[in-house]
Length: 241
Ligand SMILES: *Cc1c(COP(=O)(O)O)cnc(C)c1O
Image 1 (cartoon, rainbow, N blue to C red):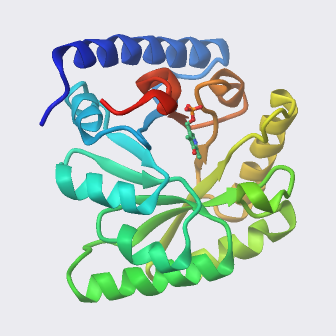
Image 2: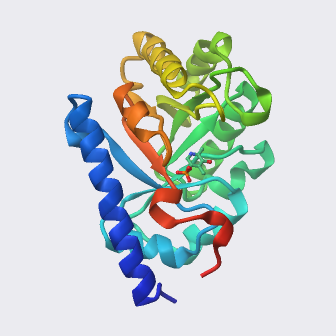
């Protein structure tokens, strides 16, 4: 199965628009266009969209539902793709994700970090993985437990736990600006959290921040990864192509 020619054309147009937005945002922020990576968020979207975007040169993909993502990764088996898990992950779903995922960006508790570490070590032993798992700690701007993320006061403890886990490699910080929040203030807080993390862990330089609606503000505040869904693949509520 592959995307229809019409869908391919639509994705190509949207991708060009998103790349233009990213380039303009980088230029406006006085940053190089190569400082911000595009992650295509393809949750709820069919594997044919992922394949089409990979053909158009996208390499980083984001998924947020374990079962759905595992099915897509298995169906595609595409070695060009780096899969990022960016949604809430229950500990008992770690096994579903670990065999194919490159990076989990939503690590927000010591128990989840421990479960991922255990699962990765088992997968390495079993030959299901060849490398440890890259991890971002997810930071919660407002401490609301419903949205996921660790509040500011737990961030550095969680990060040091990750650095001590043999199966995990700390790469940086991910965050989602709270709905309805002042974007300027939210991304300033996210940037500050990233800076605090990097002060202790200089190699944890990834700052995954910004989505379709707010990527310009995020890039002004140091984002290195824009996670773009809607602007790239359209409205998720209207799918099933
Ligand atoms: C869905 C999702 C995105 C993409 O959001 P859009 O507004 O569709 O670009 C980015 N990050 C996370 C964590 C998401 O769940």
